Figure 1 (cartoon, rainbow over the protein chains, first blue to last red):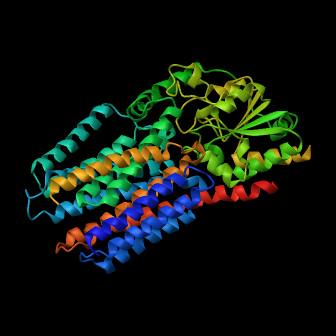
Figure 2 (figure 1 turned 60 degrees about the vertical axis):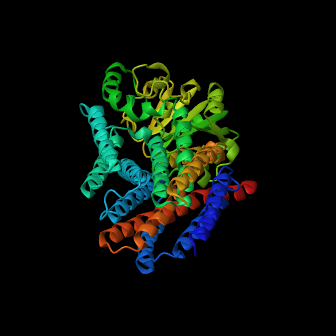
Length: 464
Length: 103
């Protein structure tokens, strides 16, 4: 197949990707959109196999079988709660692939240094740097979400300066390569430096900001793919990579906006630096009594309320409690209680995380309230039942200028008549910040695993 | 086609792709943010085409081939895993739509 034909067939793939993204923006067509994208990907792979250029079909086939099997098994076996780290993992390997392509391509032209066009070497350098950062950063994000390392921000003295210096060194190596110093060792050093930078860049970012980081790294991998397209003079890579780069950037901005923080602030700012001191300060100044209640007490409270709002968070996801939550809601509704769910845009570990879980449990769409709607309802709410959410209901975001999350819009559960918080223990949340909501006189705590607590509540409501 | 001319076409489609990317997803509801992120994650698996090209290209160098093949493995995991995870997420949305009338 000639290169012209190949390019035209790649255009079919590009069209399917655009349609896939369009269909993904509507719940009714989203699944078909994803399938169309998969078909487009298959077309691109087949077309690449049918090129004129010599191909080591056998080796490539084996490589695909290994990678594909791993991907399929991992994606099938993962529980719904672990989806965010799976997205991080698959994003990381994509970035890694882009970096390796750059390495291989650069090694391939090694016998003839100085013959490389400047734009080709610039593309190689860019895809190597961005791909490596995306790979290493995604792996750290994966480790944090999987709780292989702590979710708290890792901070040490001169952190920003170290990172800036490291990045400057990587950039200098890149410039030297483009300028004509086409040495293999310099390329390997550049990749090593970019990998290290990726790790150091994500380490200081607190767990609560992980959704924003994954979204950003997703955009990075798209950019790396686009740079790979320039390096190989391949249109499908340029367009598809850039589509992901642009959409990922937009999504990152939307999420930042939901938290009322700029992306720069998320990446380099307050969280890493402020968290330790603010936690200390808050722990010192907050006093008050934590009141805990039994499941029976809470069940009575819920059963005799007019209006109950459930506020799900990561705790519900971890405990896999979404089905039990829906069952409890059904019991309350059968008693005439009005039930709705308040969804914070960044509750859980990804935007829309709670929507996906509650969708799995067949909760009807109209009961899911977005933040603004939910906040206008809290003053009329008898009981707000917080199920494993923490930072997204922390009143310090409104009141305490010293708090690292000050300024983030929250769900104002403290405006309802009573607040019940389901929580495993008094430990601060993933972000490591104290929450004065727990000490509010309106609040009672029901300690325990979210699933067990919700089951107990359901049993108690049934027994009434 | 001269290299410079090709480059100018490449830059043109790159810039158009940026606008297309913003335009196409700007209407996605919050509800679908996670599947969207996962779906775009699968789409950048298109690097598999690049990986196949460098792994399979006609060169004698073993190291190039080996690095290229590792890239093929990683990119395949990205493609298959990305689409399957997204499909699993979206399957749940579908299921709910069907069940809604009888609930």
